Every structure is written in C-alpha cells, then in structure tokens.
Length: 203
Image (tube, rainbow, N blue to C red):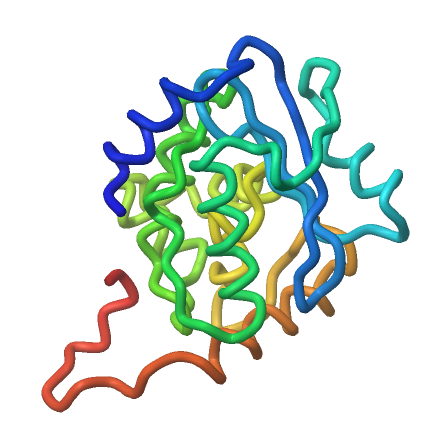
C-alpha cells in the first residue's frame, strides 16, 4: 500500500482529534504506538513492564487515551503489522507508515526522512548519514537527532552506527543489547546482494 493510500484512510478515521495509544505483542515483547490526527506520533520498544513502556511512549506528547489494538485505525493496524513482521524476521520496509512530525525540529525531520531509506539488513555510519544530508560535519548532530527519535523501528535508528562499525548509542530500553538484537534479526532476514550489486544501503 502506498503512503498516499494510508494517508487517505487516516483522514477518514474516527476520533482523529485526540492522541491515542495501544500496546501490541511482538517477538521482543509488548511494544506501544501512539497516534493523532496527523499520523503516528511515537513508537516504543518494550520496557520493564506495560506502564513503563507507556510512560516512555508518552514523553513529550499530550495526554494519551488508551484503546484496544483492534480499535485502532487502519493505518495504525498496518504499522503494527509491519513492525510485528519485521521483529519476527521478515524483511519489511516501513517507509509507508505515515508519521506526524509537526513537533519535530527541522533538522531532526531531515535525519529521520533519510534514515527511513536505509534498507533492512543494511547499516550506515553517522558520518555517512550526515554526508547524505549535505552536512558532512554534522555527524554528532545526526547522532543527537537519532538519540531523540520517537519513532523507533519505523525510523530505523538502530541501523546507524558509529565510525569503523562501532555500535554507537541506542536510547531505547535495553540500549546497545537491544540494538545488537535488532541488527541480528535483520541480518538473518536480509536477502543476499544481487550479482553486480553496488551494495547501496538505501533501497
């Protein structure tokens, strides 16, 4: 389904004016997602328990109304299905998930948009991402933007590493252990390079 198809479904969704959230089960545990009138507001990986996951999800957001997963609008259900599939080892690209970035600083939005183009099973360095933005001296700023990423998995900040293949940071619960686990899942499901491939990280 194309991004514009999801967007049109979103516009027809009921109860659009209030930020809502639900929990959903994945291979890593119970994740959470929040959404509002403009799209997905945040995605959160499992924390110590459901209240902790929801508390982390709600940072910087208006008060969230909890709903059951099956009461979420079609675009949210599509996002959940994609995240669940990716975390169980399917090479899903989540670029079609509509995100509400109205509250996100402009530079962070640029970083997140380019990060969404990194294919599952691939990685890139903070410096390479900065150069892709046309800001070759902004590797540290890129890292800070990714450290504030509220759209974990959908904006795949775990695919961005420090120089020389070092893990760098990861602000989601579990830190670098979770980052390594995500990369291992995606490495196992990534298709082999096609003959004559240039090895591009962006699909």
